[in-house]
Image 1 (cartoon, one colour):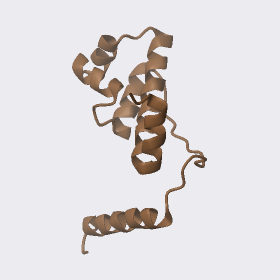
Image 2: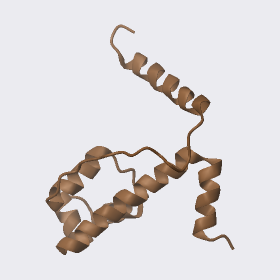
Image 3: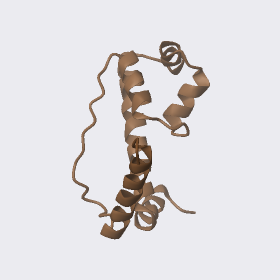
Image 4: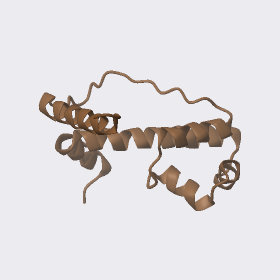
Length: 118
């Protein structure tokens, strides 16, 4: 049987980008759940405020729905909070330059396709 800690460590080594994505999702959903608990807001009440189904809210909070920054902003707004993302320098895993450069090249190619006249 694999415990969560060893699974997390293995994922961090094997796919650091995915590990950071999953950690960010977990931290965001935990923060939302803590705010809801603090203010006594149920999932069904959050769904009502968002004008969404309770199932959608469940998917957001369990990490199975793709939560965009727009969605996160909406959730914070209907809970009465402002969303202010921040970053810190990673102390866990450094993404190899080659990986990072590959991502940057793909983004640049994608942006070039979006530009008019390209």
